[in-house]
Length: 476
Image (cartoon, rainbow, N blue to C red; front, side, top):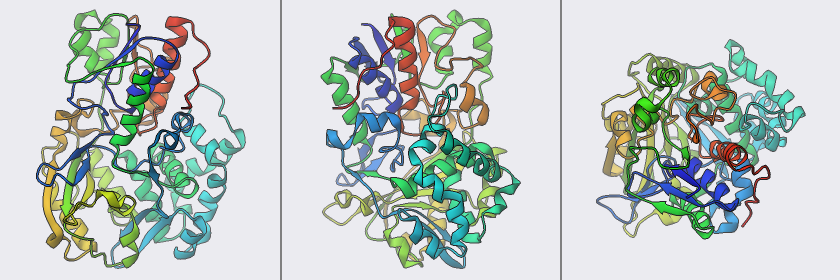
């Protein structure tokens, strides 16, 4: 076996696909009984016709990531439903702010639409360049210099107290809800970068929903891997280093347990000091019908940011970063059936996916809190709930060991990690251990279902270990 990939998340599978297509023998080892990592879908334990996305549900980068654009999921039979509405943000005591695929429609409904257009209009027109900048390896010249020059002043403004240059309570909330995907204090450059990239995608390619659930993405990657001779081993925990070259789609601290005293002392000390970020509490609901939103436009919104206005969201993220539960936490929600009606079962039951931002390792059950927040904007919501599947942050690692303390960013959602990975190394996908590499979200370009950390790790391995300098084509 030439290469072993430990972990079958999107990054691990991306690395495995590239290496297998390069003609190498590849084995993927997964500790769980199902593959996919952060892109898995499972049936509800009580209502089998309803399925829940275990981690990610909506995929803004499924069409736009350079890796997935080359891999071409639609050509492989993965249906990516792109709704007319990318996301929405209900607001107390006023109408919601809604981000449509059509930027002009978005601006028309905002109090100061011109401000939103100035922020995002030119970025949406240069979407490939914007994505290439944010998902780049942080070591190469940006692929589109004009796009980078457009991004820079907007990043500095929205990542600093100058973020007030975006005018209008509704527009500010709309952008802040997107930026809050990073689960980090705001304003900050990390949050602003995520906000700019994701909001740009919302007006350029949309926020696609995989038909049938996120598992469809993982299954397409697995099918390609196996068609090129790759192997998948499930339900096997790696406790000792596999022979040969190994790529770890794992939390960096997993190497402490796998290598033990074989790790160089300095690197081991760095990993022992590695800091994970705040967590999320996962709450999946099964609903008997449509949510009765006060603002009827929200009935068509598959992705919702339920954190209130900008001030409330920023306060909540500050509290969580300092280890405290906010009174009103940031809640992200998704109703995939609005883009994929097949997610509704024969009894008209459908899933509601939610995350609540909480302190790292929080043991708190957030089901009632999340339901209460939704009820603020949709009186009568609780009457629709026929099932609640709540997983506190402290237990997310039970089904995905990478999510230490509930941190879905694997410790990578900060500026230093976004540039350097878990240790200060020119090549952040390498380690000081011979033939051992990292390809998880703890390495650049960070969290998200985009496959780019796996892409860069595979590129490194092919060059260093096998002398392969030309990457294989990824098209079907």
